[in-house]
Amino acid sequence: MTDVWDEQLLWYARAVRAMQGRPESDPTSWLFQANIHGTRSASDNPEWNNCPHGGWFFLPWHRAYILCFEGIVRDVIQNELGGPNDWALPYWNYTRVTNGNPNSPESLECRRLPSAFRSPDWPDGEADNPLFLAEPKRSPGAAGGLPVEWAEVNPHAAMQAPHFTGVTQFGSADTDSQLLHRSAEHDGLLEMQPHDLIHGYVGGVMLQFISPQDPIFWLHHCQIDRLWAAWIASNSGHRNPTEADWLGFTHTFRNAQGNQVGFTSEELQSEEALGYVYESLTDGVGLKPPERLVAMMEAGVDPPAEKVASTTGPTDLGPDTLTVPLTPEPSARAEALPEAASPNTESRAILTMDDVRADAPPQTNYRVFVGARPDHEEDLDPEGPYFIGHLHFFGAVGASTHHHGGSGLTFKFDITEHLTELRQLGMWNGEGIPPVVVTPATLGPPPPDAEAEAVARAAAPTPPPESRPRIGSISLATT
Image (cartoon, helix red, strand yellow):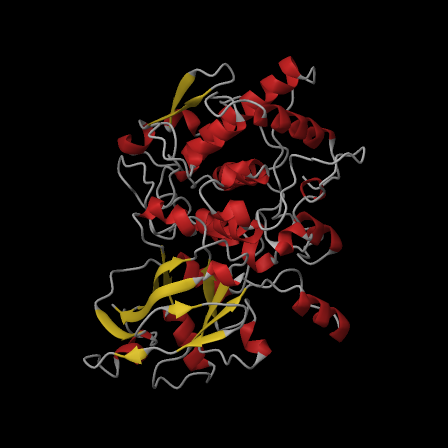
């Protein structure tokens, strides 16, 4: 959905305004619905603060959530506003690519925050558009209409994952019958990208567990739900979990009448059985990145057995590219890392970043490179040999970290193939510890000329000083 004030968006905005006028205690109000996901409120309402992230209920829970929300909005549109009775929640297809070119003008337009969400005015010029949030409730880049880069949203790795369940598989590791609200590790591929990174791109409210207070949340999650449906439809071997813990778990929400309704995960497997279909399950399902990236993201992560190097303290991040030194462990074998980088051994190299957090929305994601030279722009290409993955702060901003038991997020990167390739390309000789480089993620396509590059640099995401994005510790280990 990118059209300026498409009729569906206009009715959506009217319904949002109506729901915002209802008291928070009303289950069909805007705030009650947002609070189901997360709230800063001290209320002990058991229906609030229930969003599961980092577990295998992430997809079915959010499907039931947006299904019930859509029903409430449709009821408002039809019975309170006199609108159509067939209104459906649009999806924001930021993964759409036209003519195979992710940087075509049409593709870039899909990766901008839709314009109806960037204007403070309604179509008639009147102010107070409820879809609009001003900075700092959204990042300057998203609010200003800069597109998120293709490297941040390409869902190819998730869409090619062979299994729903498992570390770095489509839908996260098996978390038994636990609806995790405090998991610091997001290991499902779809949740990692594009879900988490879109939250980081929009920034502000979307970086926190109160994210449903931003009206774009619902269109974003409708797209995530569509990609789940597309993953199932794309390959006869793609199947949802069959374990009783997953199938039988009940997700409870409120319907348009404000009554509690429950759905088991088994009942949530098919969108068609729930009464809706998507316009397309093939449009915007990813482009194949370099083979190296596919191999890294699909690799399993085993428990580390031997720590090779680590930081000696926290690492503060900012607006500039930062090289983070890792200190070798005194007891580490000198040959441990070269062994992991050898295609003839089963050893793996794991880079772990713990307690990633910020005090306020940093308005940017970060990219992580290993072995890059920070003063060489070409080394910081997210499709180049030095890139290993992203950092984001969704759910690890200020008070949101209480969802993780007070800790920030943990990111694990299997860099085995990465180090092997660097050795083969002569970019690392196997000695010492390759430097870790962290840089803010840029927005938009590569600049075509020097003038455009200057504009792009001026618009590069800059974390506010009060945000204090940081990494608690970084360690490199081999298995």
